[in-house]
Length: 344
Image 1 (cartoon, rainbow, N blue to C red):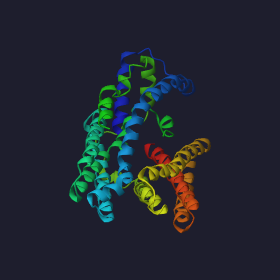
Image 2: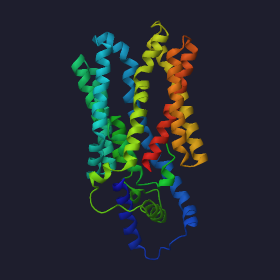
Image 3: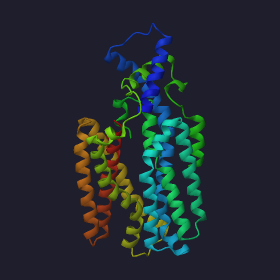
Image 4: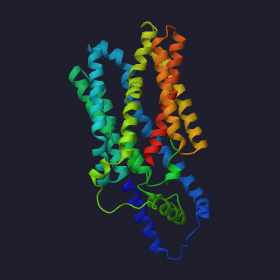
């Protein structure tokens, strides 16, 4: 976050020095003047970031849809599959902070492009898995390169959006597209006028970066850090369990008598609930204000637990699917709200 603010602040200071006639606007008129520029940024910055984010997500979950066939063809047991997923999360969890430290040393676009290209190549290597150890190796590397993408995206987008604008928003070839087409910061947005650049840079740069490097001891003593760490731990266990095991759960509900295509189709039902839940909770949080997000995250996690419980105890396929759909809706609704809180 500090890097994003420093880029915006530096640009803001530079452009204001070059134009001493710039008038300071009142907060209300400034907000009105910013709306066209922010609308351009949303329209031109967010779509290209959405595509690699989607590809990243697909690369994370594609393994669960081919797990059964892979296990049969390569002779991998459920234990090996689970252990491979575990290796993915070892590097995925441990490399997020180091990756963001490296982002401070490089351009945000260049680092995100490198990560995207790298995990794209790792995903291609899935086709060359021949056994247990190659499976472990690819899963470990995939977690290594995907770890820093979403946190890095948050830092990068903070170069363009203020806290108020940012809080409610929601592969190899995509990495190349990022490198060549995505702006580095506000100053390189050719679609904005100089006046727009001044206003956006001034607003984004209002939060000043503290001098020097952040003190690790001070950071680790922040109560908010541990609050969100606990939230992510509680959230991550059912979230990733849902992603990696829903196709297998559905296959067992159908007694293994359906094709992989049918399993994929049936898996879309809980994910349809996820889309609805994500949009619904975001709308509710936006309606009731930022402070309501804590309440809605808590309620959503309770309902997700109820969905898991309903799906596990019911002997009815219909009720099991209802439980999985409730779980998907509430987990993904929480996901968006948690990211928006961390970004702020």
